[in-house]
Image 1 (tube, rainbow, N blue to C red):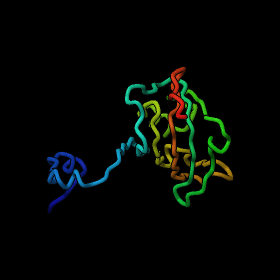
Image 2: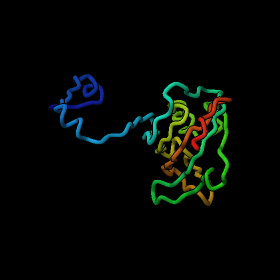
Image 3: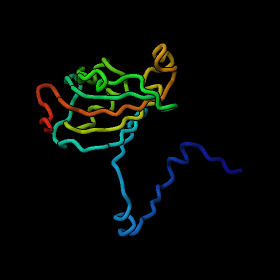
Amino acid sequence: MFRTTIASTLRRPLTTQLLPAQHIQSQPFSVTQAIMGVKRDVLRDGNGQDYPKAGDTVTMHYVGTLAEDGKKFDSSRDRGKPFSTVIGKKKVIKGWDEAVPEMSLGEKARLTITGDYGYGERGFPNLIPPNATLIFEVELLGINDKKVPSQE
């Protein structure tokens, strides 16, 4: 009798299929990075040099929506003022603590955050249901005293 276990599956060699270069070059793409309960889709590259680390104060604009129905539950843009917080020190949801340090200054990204990396079983009464998957469009405007040059 043949049994497949997780361990035996993990020991199998990975196989890849190579696509012709002309196929790859003809396909539009975006950069996507998944970190545990967070998926990050880069919408606009940052400077590629400056990344926040735990304990840094970040300044960003964001719009938060529910993945289930697209309902907006919060937006710094609607308030007309960027949001600042210390990152990597459990001051914000786990999904932000994990994803924001992967962003470079000036980057704009879409973060898809599963419930366990968002507000979990408690949700946020009257705004976010328990275990809700959240989508944030975030733009990293500043790290400590370093800011994105204004685009006029």
